[in-house]
Length: 290
Image 1 (cartoon, one colour):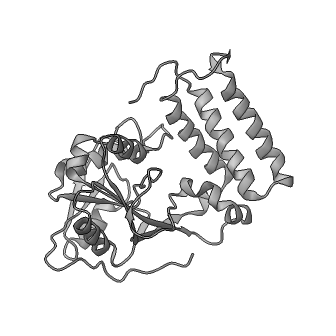
Image 2 (cartoon, one colour):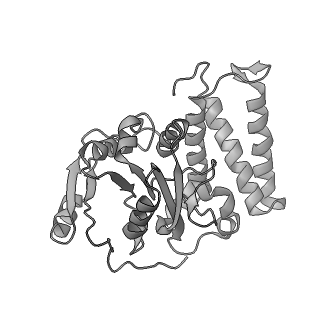
Image 3 (cartoon, helix red, strand yellow):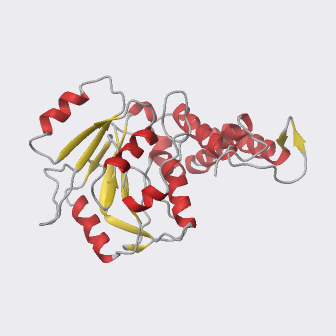
């Protein structure tokens, strides 16, 4: 997808907002870059010394002054009317607590053919999101992603990010936003789809590989393992037989599929097998996460 440049960020008249950026132990010139923008944006830099994205995000929740927190990442380009579209949604759905917008992939260079053709099967790995439906209350299956979502501060205070989940040194577990929205949905929170509040998520060449996909799915499996309990009859090496079968069946399908399967079907099996392996490696006999 071609890059859509953003000459400025347009906010509604009379709407007060602040841009909070958390420096979570950066080793580059992040402080200098932030200083350069202090006179152009309502910028408030913060520092979180404890490593981990969820720790940084929880600092934002504690320090934010607004009623709503709109989230994005440092590898995302937002559209010029991104804030305006969210504000319109806040006003149209004042009872809603969770909002999510469209996320388009922005590849560095031309992606490999197998990835371009099979992308729908792994879109979630790259935080791509498009429900292909008009704005409004979202279906139960929709879980916004941190690259483009908004949540009321009050909801965040009830359910902070779990510091054990999310990018951090030595861990590939992801899913901090999913766990949070899952908890809010269980509380009865309304979730709204805001496709006009769109962003582009940068995908560097280093992530356009099977190795990256496997690592991501392993982390996904590790998260699921912390929520697993034994299912069905039969165990092998302390793990359910059904989980071994799922790993083996889709591993062979992914490997042999290099020669016979369309990329989308093969990548789907790759994701299932790698997730199953992550669960097998980290299987728990008791649930360790809520």
